[in-house]
Length: 147
Image (cartoon, rainbow, N blue to C red; front, side, top):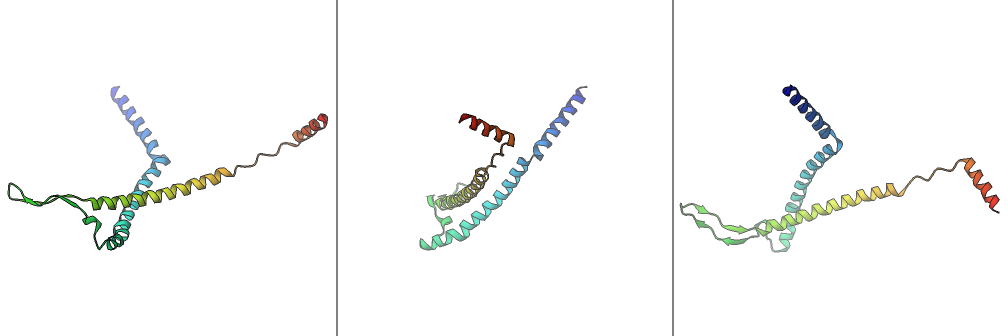
């Protein structure tokens, strides 16, 4: 009997999970995550390959990803191995900030467009239906009796 109960609980759990996974919101979210990942790569490439090179030329030919502060020079470890320098790579940080600003701006524009489309739908409510003829006649009689 215990085995049957566990099996029924598992089937109920699987059915509940299937209903959850097939709902439109979960599928929409999955699609959004995939598209968002691809969009992030496009923006990163746009910033790295198109935006930053002209800025680097304007600043004297520097590459932003090369901007760094050396906290500790290269050294040789106790076992004789070469230890690389310790760097504070603020150029990569600047590039990531520019990536973020572009993504945030595009998302802002998309949300603004969606909100304006929703407002247009809400702004055009259907006109109220005309009252029946009997009601109109009763209102006219009422108005005549008031005089």
